[in-house]
Image (cartoon, rainbow, N blue to C red; front, side, top):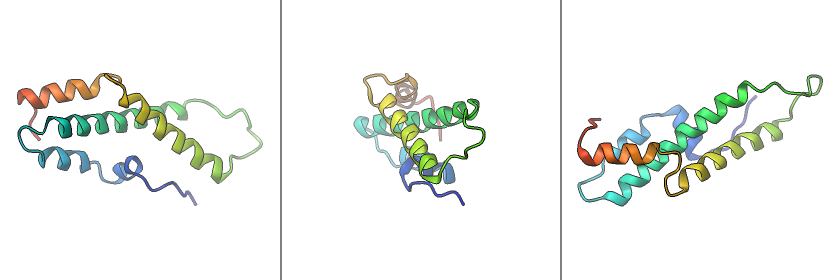
Length: 109
């Protein structure tokens, strides 16, 4: 049984259209909200990337299985790490690029 915390990023794995719905509901002139949606997408992308990268690292404790608490903590750590990575001025750059694309009207949902 795999129990994970109930939060926004993990819920997006179940419903990836959540970000698209938020972007569609924005009206013209809502620049701040648009940037927040773009940062949220960047955070989700970073989380998924970190999660896949973590799968490539072998466990050193081959004989001792990780507890459920350890697994939950590691998932929460990756989520918070991805949020912090995208919260900076430019993050990793995906949010800024998406924002510019949406502002220029080059992206259709």
